[in-house]
Amino acid sequence: MFRTGPRNLITDVAGLRVGNASDAKLKSGVTTVLCDEPAVGGVQILGGAPGTRETDLLEPHNSVETVHAVVLSGGSAFGLDGASGVQAALRERGVGFEVGGFRVPIVPAAILFDLRNGGDKHWGRYPPYRDLGYEAAQTASADFQLGTIGAGTGALTAGLKGGLGSASTMLESGVTVGALAAVNPTGSVTIGQSRYFWAAPFEIGDEFGGLGYPSPMPGDSRRIALKYRDKSMAGETRSGSNTTIAIIATDAVLTKAAAKRLAISAHDGFVRAIWPTHTPADGDLVFALATGMSGIELTADAAIHLYAAAGATMARAISRGVFAATPAENDLFPVWSSRRI
Image (cartoon, rainbow, N blue to C red; front, side, top):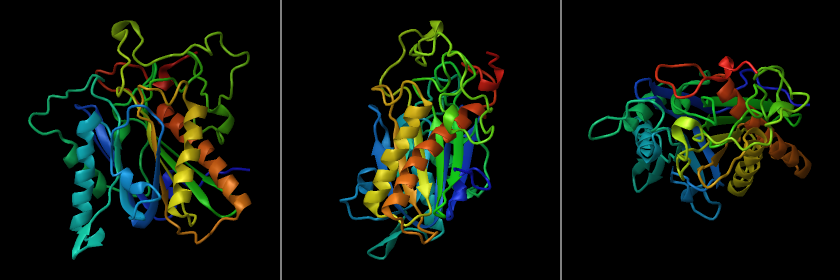
C-alpha cells in the first residue's frame, strides 16, 4: 500500500531541494530542483512541441552521467534563460562538472507557454528569466509552496488555472519516489466541468479534495475540453501554446538507462491525470533524477513497483498543482476551489 513521505513533496527524496521565484505582474516564474550531490539524470519527451536545454546530454548513450540541477520555467523559449541563472548561482558555489580545470554546472531545463495569460510581458530588451532562475536557486529548500508559484505562476489548463504540484510515495523496499510538475496542458485535469479529478483513484487521503469519482459520470466526461476553445479565444489552440513539464525523482540507485525508464513510466501519470495529453500542441516532458542516497539497488520485482509508483505519484502531483492554485489579478480562468459542481 502506498503512503506519502513526511512532506508529500519531491524533497522527501533525500538529496534534493526546490526553489521558486515568481513575478506576479509578469504572471510567470521559475522553479529549480537542486541536487546536493550530482544525480543520475534522464528524460523522456512525448509532447509534440517541446522547448528544452541539455536534453540530448541526458540520453543513456551520451557521456555525462549526472546533473547538478534541473529547471522548469514559464516564458516559452524566453524562459530557457532561467537555467543560466541557476547555473550562475551554482558556479558561485564551486559546483559543476570539471573540464580542463573549469567547473561547469550541468543544468537541463524545459519551458511551458504562459505568454498569453493576462500578465505583462513588456519586459524590455532582455527577459527576466535569468534573474528569476538565480533567485530560485538562492531560495531552494526542502519545504516549498504549491499552486500559483514558480513555473506554475501563470499556468492554465482547459477552463481552470494550473499550477505547481508535487507529491511523494514511500515504497516497501525502502525507496522514496517524488514528483514535481508545472501543470499547463491543452487538456483538462477534471472530469468534464466538474470538480472531480481524473487522477482520483491514485489520491492518498484528501490531498486534492478527497472527492473520488462522480457517480454517475457526468454526461460531458468524454468531451475533449481544450484550453483555448472558450468563446473569447476560439481557435487559439496552437503548437507550443501549452505543456506540462515535470520531474520524477528517487533515492534508489539507478543507471542512466534506468533513469530514462523512470521518466518514461512517469508519463503514465500524465495519461491518468490529464485528458487529452501528449498532443501536438503540448511539449510534455519528464526529467528523471536518481540521487542514490538510499543505497538501495532494486531487484527486478521491486523495480516494477518503482515504475508503477512513478506514474501514480506524477498523477497526484499534477492534480495537487491545480488543486492548490490561487486567484490573482487579471486571471483568464478561475481556480479549482471556485468550482461548485
